[in-house]
Image (cartoon, rainbow, N blue to C red; front, side, top):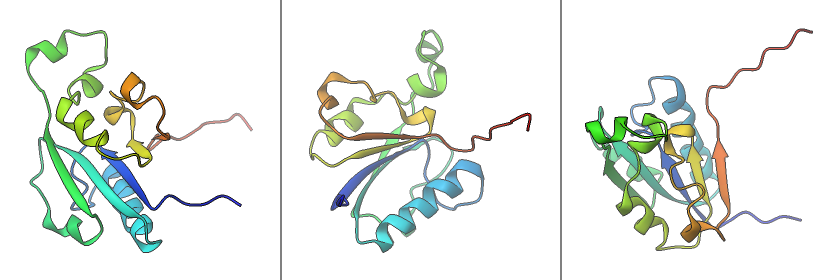
Length: 136
């Protein structure tokens, strides 16, 4: 029988409140569902087009906000801009403060997915808004 973790880190590409579009709806309702099961949530989100939301404190033990790097240097990289612009050392340092699993919400949030400092951590990459087409 598998056991659920007592806490998780969730890395979101943006602030998941209000839940009013695409992937943000997924992130917000995942937070509600995890909270309902008694899992403590450490939410890490990038702020660039939304304001901090005190409503998230109802579901999360702690919410961290990080600035997205939107300068020209982040456009000049082999790493996709949506990923590179979310490379924040403060995020990495906060993830290293505990040993809980990390859920990376969408490709945008995956900059530290393969970081050597997190190599022994359970990491989950959750691709959002993916639809598959079959010829059947």
